Length: 214
Image (tube, rainbow, N blue to C red; front, side):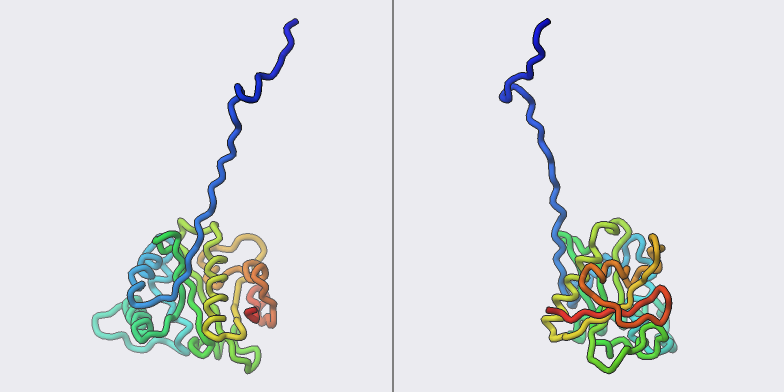
């Protein structure tokens, strides 16, 4: 019987492993010129809650009060957030894949978020000055790709550059996958991986976590 010999290496078809590197997320403060990028994120599929609230809910201690004539609640919130941006103090950060905006994180000194002061879940742990990370918005098509974690890393870096010595967040801690609508605060596992430590838990599934940026 003829021997079954493998053809020489030069004659064999090479085996190629194709590896696609994940795009690197660039995180930038929300400035007036970047406002259209925020609108692109909020107007994307899966972000209906964001384009109603415009990340203003936790910046007020109570209800919004009377709406300006001819405005809906969503339009008034949009105008209020735009006013904060135009005042020159970025209320959060936008994440980009290349030039495409794919996510948003709201953060700032705790005193910027008046509702946290009296929240039964997120009320102050002590009197230390902290920066609060309050909300993530990622369009449906970009979820499950590590966008929120990259935004968190960007938030840590940004807060440190702005002089924050202590970061605080209020994640969701549920077994299994929770609905996207309940995950605006981010998952506790994401904060655990970033080095945050739990400092309080006033509700079974809602811890308070902190990190001292290095």
